[in-house]
Image 1: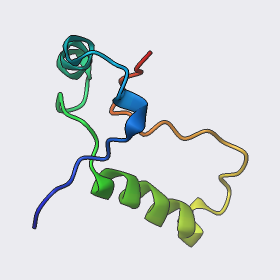
Image 2: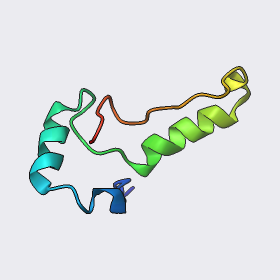
Image 3: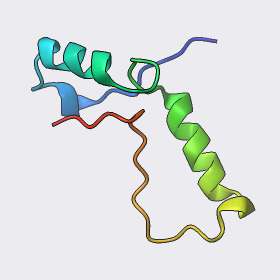
Length: 67
């Protein structure tokens, strides 16, 4: 299975140095998120087990915030 990075044009104006610093300081696995990482969250939110989750902002960032 080939993993694809969940990157977008949002990073086009961010320097490579800044991205590398963010990767090193990302608490979870020091990597960019993958499509599967996001799909897991979407699948859970679509499941009955998430029925009490409403009106929330879900941060799928591995603990990293990019500025």
